Amino acid sequence: MTQTRIVEVRAGVLKKNDELARGLRTRFESAGAFVVNLVSSPGAGKTQLLERTLGELAAAGHRCAALVGDLETDNDARRLARSGVPVQQINTHGRCHLEADVIGEFVGAWDLANLDYLFIENVGNLVCPASYDLGEALRVALLSVTEGEDKPQKYPTMFNSADVALITKIDLAEACEFDRSAAHGAIHEVRPGMTILEVSARRGTGMSAWLDLLVARRDAWRNRS
Image (cartoon, rainbow, N blue to C red):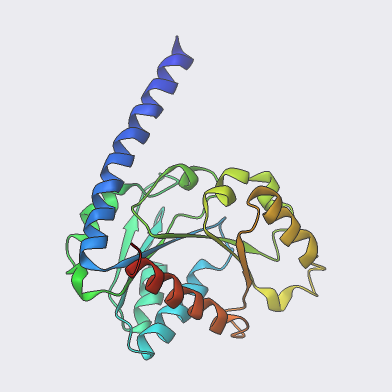
């Protein structure tokens, strides 16, 4: 009975979240704000990637903002704010993921029509965030070379729910004896045909391809039938 009750409660929570996420998606689409949800395990390099992404997009004239999820502290938000774009920190105080109701609460302070891109840096976790739709147009899963090539096979739900995979910290691949071919194979085993990019936010490697992808995906999203 206890297990049944847990399943029922979880199903109810996810159903409510999905309903709220659909409402968010409608708001984002109406405003023309392209929302990108960045998901990964802790330490995969989301903040460094996002810091550079925000700076380069803003320099190119794109209007951006970011929501940053973390259990505690506003360290990442203060770091991202150096890019000059609007940033808000969301502290979950122990919750291992962000949910649609929280996103709705925090974006209420912004005029979404004034944004080209809204980035959500999710809480570092490869389990819970996979189940929670945040109304995003693009979900990007990060895998750093320091984590090993088999992470997608260990956490298939996350990678299967993503639209794009980024292999981060690629400048450390040789030092970590990272097998690129094996990593690509593991990702495609879970999600055949998924776009994979290799990047180093520290060195700038692959950033042009990443930024081009964002622009192309947003253009396709805006021009969809």
